Image 1: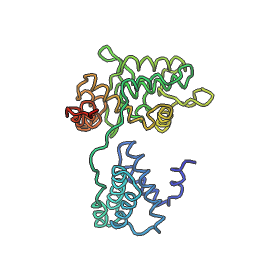
Image 2 (image 1 turned 90 degrees about the vertical axis):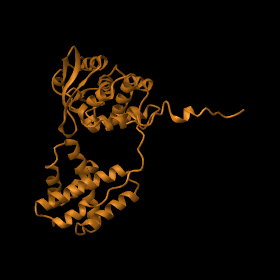
Image 3 (image 1 turned 180 degrees about the horizontal axis):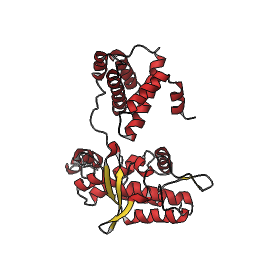
Image 4 (image 1 turned 45 degrees about the vertical axis):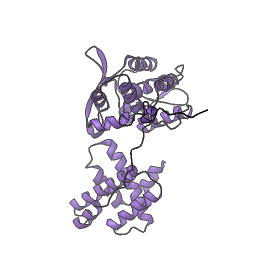
Length: 309
């Protein structure tokens, strides 16, 4: 049983029902997973405090403990968002006094100082990653195809897990991943490089599968098991390759950043990169690219100074 399952098993029926009430109001599967995790952790902490009456002071104390534990501001704020949603739903359903709910919604989030620099692979590093899987094995062929769509198309790991052969279609003389459903159930189509399609084709031919989900689990005996793969399994695959490389901190989302960065350096317009990534605003895409802080041609490179001797 996973750690998350153990936490869920300790929840009271009322807590489980409260979480379900929140999740039923969320359209995105990504948000549902994050909020379920956040609320399970909160109820676990709440029980350890003796289950005090839920109010603003209790939530403020929880947020303070998260910050003191060194949790990143973005993670603290995500957990507070889940708790605020819980308070709003409880008030709407008559389970919490509206005034108390308003107090909880007024709890301030953690302040973010500056902007975290993204993690990208260079073109040479990205090429090394594509060449890393051992394509003499089924696992290697699958992993190369997986890396090809993560780096070559900028997919999120959840999108790669739900990618089906029906998504792979020709449009305007090229291969495109058509009608992908991303965060907040937004639909988009993503052009695919020919080498990514070739990697999928080799994997498909080898396993004899051309329908349903593209990526499947492969066991230690190098045999396909089941008819799909989870987003968590994709995360574990990427972390595994990162452990074997010089960049040990690479995660699936960094491959998505790499797609954006290499496309931008290659001359792709930012608005087209935004469409491929499915970002709602150009500002989010710019954060991915780090265009507001040019680390290649930085201000310090123009100082005209050097060390003597």
